[in-house]
Structures are given as structure tokens and as C-alpha cells.
Length: 349
Ligand SMILES: NC(=O)c1ccc[n+]([C@@H]2O[C@H](COP(=O)([O-])OP(=O)(O)OC[C@H]3O[C@@H](n4cnc5c(N)ncnc54)[C@H](OP(=O)(O)O)[C@@H]3O)[C@@H](O)[C@H]2O)c1
Figure 1 (cartoon, rainbow, N blue to C red):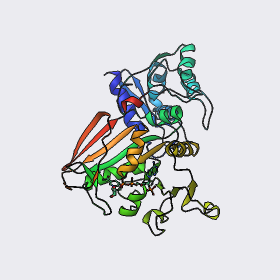
Figure 2 (figure 1 turned 60 degrees about the vertical axis):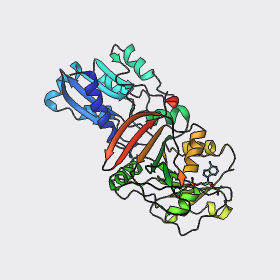
Figure 3 (figure 1 turned 45 degrees about the horizontal axis):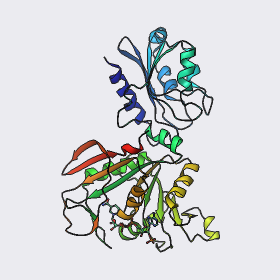
Figure 4 (figure 1 turned 90 degrees about the vertical axis):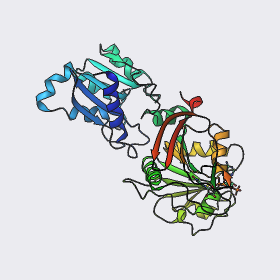
């Protein structure tokens, strides 16, 4: 079996941590002896053991003597510093694993190639870059977060067959139930979700995750002049909400739900907002519309992935859907809807 197949298994394992490990990376690991997987694990929970630790702990007693003759596949370079848990490079050396295969380097400044170097210096054979051109690396979110000092940004919207994403002043349902379930899966996996003022007013979305197992994201709404009424679903207490406004009042900043952040709505609004998210450890953000808001992110090239649900419905007129220019990396049929995923190639490191 090829290295790529074992690495693909690491990616699948890594994604089981989605929604639970941020701002740590999703990481999966498998230990292979003569084409047989004798251990596997993933980083399950922020602050808890890393994938390598869980992988080695899963090896059966009868196979433990094989560890020092096995190859460890890891989706991300092992950490080499003691953070919330000990360094994984120490574990690999202690277990005398002779060969390590890695998909991507960890761009966290304390690691950034040092994990590989420490292993090589100790005589471990290290292969890097396996499956690194895969457009869906589980480590992308972490590496965007630490290298760009902002969350990984997904633009997400549904559009009609004639290219509209809504109609002025009224709510229109475009996507079908399969698309909606997937959209809620995204909410379980991403840290935060953001919408513009008109969407909050017109659609009154709850922005919670109700159709997938897991948490709801932090909800963020832009409301420059505080024109949104307090009875919107967004302001009900099922998940935390941040209001980004020019008009925060002192006493309201102390209130837990919603929380108000005062920012100038100038040309640096998005950069300043993303910097606040970074400081709060929010490593992934869905921008769910509307068109005006998504367009501002596109103009600034502040996006990494676009998730577009193309539906057969026709609106005839309305608010034109944005057209992100990215590389198509996946396409799925969801009943009569088609889900297309684009990556912002220009933003790929
Ligand atoms: N099909 C879908 O997937 C989908 C998803 C979401 C929404 N929608 C539809 O889209 C429609 C709303 O879209 P929309 O384009 O009219 O509005 P929108 O993007 O929801 O909100 C636009 C408003 O938000 C504020 N804003 C957003 N970004 C800003 C920025 N960078 N700088 C300053 N202000 C910013 C401004 O408010 P001020 O004018 O107060 O400054 C702006 O007018 C709704 O009808 C909704 O149904 C469709």
C-alpha cells in the first residue's frame, strides 16, 4: 500500500476533531508495520493529548514490540515544545520509531520545521510533503491562523439558477434539506459565523446548529448604526452573539449577551475585526452573507474557501450572488442542488 493511502487515513482521523480542537490543529496519525496499521489516533479535544499520543496508546500489547520497526504517518509535523501537553518529538524518540512521514509542516513559530529537524538530528528518517498538494488539508485552518494571524475564512452562500442569492427586503429559501444539513455541519465545525445587517433584518436567522451533532458557532453580526431590533433570533441566548458596531454604549459592553464591539466602519473594518477574532483564538469563520458583506471580503482578498450551493430555483430578479474566482476543488450533487467548493489559490501558502 502506498504512503498516500495511509496519509489519507490520517486526514480522515484528523477531521474527527473538527469543532473540538480549535485553535489547535486537527491532526491524525497512524502507525504502520509492514502495511498493517497497528495504531491510530487523532487530536480529540483542545488541551488534551495530541494525535501521536493517542495513536501510540492505541497499540495493542501484543504489537508493542513492533513500534520500533514501524512508520508513523502524521498529517502535521509533530510539535517540539511543551505547551499544554509534552512535545511529541520526545515521544517519537522515546518510542524509538525509526521513520516518520508527514503531510504538512506546522507554521506555528515554535515549530516551523524544528520538529522535523529534531527528529532528523536524532537519526529518524523523515519524509515530508506526502499529499501536501491535497486541496483539503486538515492543517490548513491552523496554518492560516498562525501565519496570517486571522481565522481561516469560508464564504458560504446559496444561489438561484439565474444567479441571485436573495430578494430585497424578503426572505427566500433556495437550498434543499440536504444542503441545509451540510450547512449546519459547517456550523458545528467552525468557530464563528458572520452576517451583514440586511441579512439579520430580512431573514432573522438563528445561526445556531440544529441539524448536526455538536456545538453552535459564535454568532457575529455587523450593525454599524444599531438598527437591528433586540427581538431578533440572533440575540436570543442559545449561542453567544457579538455585535460589531460604531455605536456601542459603555454600560452595554458589560452585558454578556450580546457583546458589543466598537469598531470604525472604515476601510480597515474587516482587518480590525479579524484581528480581534485572532486575539480571541477564533481560528475559523464562516461568512454567510449577504452579497454586500461577502463582496467586501472578496475585494480585500480575505477568504480561503467558498462553499456555493447552486439550486434549480429561479428568482427572475433580486440581489446578485457574488462570483468568487477560485480553484474548484470539489463538487457534490445534493438532490437537485449542487455544492461547489472553491479554494482561493492566490491565498494558498
Ligand atoms: N442565498 C444565501 O445564501 C443568502 C445568505 C445570506 C443572505 N441572503 C440574502 O441576502 C440579502 C441581504 O444581502 P445584502 O447584500 O443586501 O446585505 P448584507 O450583506 O446582509 O448586509 C449589508 C449591510 O451590512 C453592513 N455591512 C456589511 N459589511 C460591511 C462592511 N464591510 N463595511 C460596512 N458595512 C458593512 C452595511 O450596513 P449599513 O448599511 O447599516 O452600513 C451593509 O449595508 C437578504 O435578502 C438575504 O435573504 C442570502
